[in-house]
Every structure is written in structure tokens, then in C-alpha cells.
Image (cartoon, rainbow, N blue to C red; front, side, top):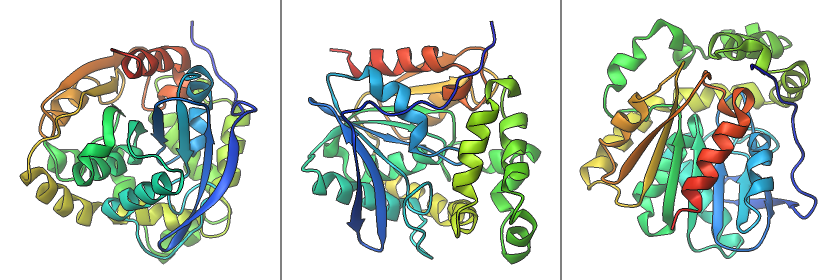
Length: 288
């Protein structure tokens, strides 16, 4: 049965703090006790997407930032290449006295996650990577030619003028066209994220996330040339989106990759198949 899910709050024991790092202030939710898990969101969401998973990972210290320029983090003019954003996350972990963590990432969070794991491999114990490619890796050039991904190159002053005041219309396109069941992204969820992306500077920063892909591709090729990641990786693809290609792509950069499929879902796995996605994450994170 297809269903929709409302936005959930983080558990009551989670604290919210603003962490100042080089060039930005990162909005962070953190709570729990035990081995650390860092969860990174992508475009069209914020760290709020991970609240249902955080509620289940009760034997872990869960850290959920909003990426630079997104959600309730600050909106600096630069620093949207994923190597810089990976260093953002490293600084957040340092401020929280976390040496290493499992990572769970989705969409642009995947790109930041790879840049982190490649620069700081000893700090990542496991990595769950969900439904988005890595710039410059595997069939990236073919992916860029996919007409559905025109938004990768949609940016600039005129694009920002077109979207200003119409953020909901723009975001609806992603939720409707990149899902298996648009009704799974309910009205409350759409309003919640549209309000965050309508904040001053938010769409400018979001467009800069995509604008950095060219540099990210260059950086990723250089990082991959240094050798493959060796930590366990679970590559989850949605059956109406990247599917098994996720595991194929990750094998270009990692040696220990397990593939998985989120069924009856498009790209928005936490909105479309919350229980299934949460179960896959938790099973892998808690694997002996």
C-alpha cells in the first residue's frame, strides 16, 4: 500500500546547536549515547529528513547537520565544493569530540560523504550511501546527459529571479517527477521544506551546490586516484531511480560494497518508503 509520511520531530533528548567552523555556521542536531553516526541530507530536504532514523538509533550518538548554505545553516557565498563541505563536517565532529563515525548520506550528502571518506578514511567506520551519483566517478558523463537532470546546470541571476517567490513550484517539480508516488510527499512536508528553501540566500546557495559539480568531478578523480575506500559500504538505490547502479558506481571508489534496493520508491526514499529505508540503514549500522 502506498502511503505518505508527515515530518517528524527529533527525539526530545536531542540538542540543537550552532557550530561555527571556517567560513560558515552549521546547524546541528545531536543526541544519544554510543558509537557515533553522522547523517547528511541533500537538495530538497534538510537534516530534518533523518528524524525517524535518529529515533531508532537509540544506542548511538547521532549527529545531523544541515549542510553549508542549506536548512538553518548559514549561507556563505563560497565553499560549496564538496571537499570544503567535508572539512565542515570534520570540524563539526571535532567540536563535538567525535573522532570517527558511521556515515549515512543521501543525494548531495553522498558527495560530501565521499569527499569526507576519501580525505579522512580513518574517521569513517561504515558508510550507507543512498540514491545519487558521485561527480566524475563511473558513468558521470552519461548521467549529465540525462534530460531529467537539467537542474544541474540551472543557475545564475536570471534563474534565481525566476524562482524567487516561487520556491514551492520549483521544489514540487523535484518531488513530483523524481518520485514513484508524488502523493507520498504530503502537503505538510512540502510546505515545511519550501519555507526553508525560501529563506534569504537559500536558493542561491542551493544553486551553488550544483554549480560546484564541475570542480567536484575534478576533485573526485584525484581522490579516487589515491586508492579505493576500504570501510564497509552499503549502496542503496531506489528501484524507480538509481537502483542497482548505486552499487556499481560505488565499486569504482570502494572495495567492500554491498548493494541494496529500496522497492516501490523513487529518489525520495525517506518520504516514500520510510520504514523500509530505516530498516536497511539500522541493520547495516548495527551489523557486527
